Length: 432
Image (cartoon, rainbow, N blue to C red; front, side, top):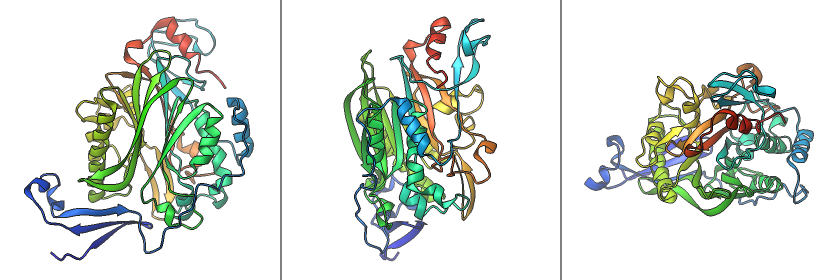
């Protein structure tokens, strides 16, 4: 075999370089047979063009007070928006409910499902987690070819407050975001709402090769200061067969202030594109991710969020659910009432729905995984219907990303409540 480097093009701005390498019996045991004689030389977003090393400075025009009420910020977001956001609702599991209860909870039956609007969770025994690929501004306007999306709907001035509104509408306690390339703007807005955040960029972000970029894209994680004490955080560039890739993860250990309960939350974004090789690479990234999460958690319960770029039929899905020591389940799958079918068949039909040059893409690739020993899924945010979304799909004037957000309410296992006490908590999820 020639020692000449070979290139496999993955997308317009991303290339995977593979070069032959001597094999050993020990190394060969780590890799599938058809890849035994190859080692990843570099997994980045390099092209023949030089990097354009811009800083995150395109939102210097914003002038926000140090503190705003949630209503004030949402009003500002709505005023800045081109059109109202797609309206979505929570599904909440109502257990052991009596009859003739007040307001919206009249005559609910045991295990009924109720559509609700959202107020912040007040119980220290519940955690609301929000997961979303927000769509990188540089990639969305330059590389992603959303052929049915009006050009001005992709403009950052029209998108930025819609992104903030989508987050704040659901009053999350923890926020995990991917494809963030305007972190300073999100940080400024969310700090007015009492959130603290961190950001970890991709080491060779494709944004850096695009004119007019606002710096690299990466993963961000925010948490509500009034509810949690910060314990520690860490970041990792994910590896494939001991070689760094271009995908990252960020984790934080948080302590619930009122109860002292600690847990780890993690956010990640795995490699995109279809094909057997890419599926294998995602699975290897996932193994490294899970090792990192398991080590960082040190026995604490885990909530793992991300854009895995993998449908439930891919190996990485089974790898996550089967990882020893974490006992992870998929929140949306486990909330489904049909427990007689495998988890992969209980996932939502889509978490992204877009139209590109190559055609329409509608599938599930985003997930919120959780430790089943520690948490119960109490509610999930529903996805909009095809009619709600419209023929142009997303992004659009009504939705700023090509991915839909996921949002889940978790309850600590030993804090499960029934009857009237449970109803009183659910009343906190009331109309805005």
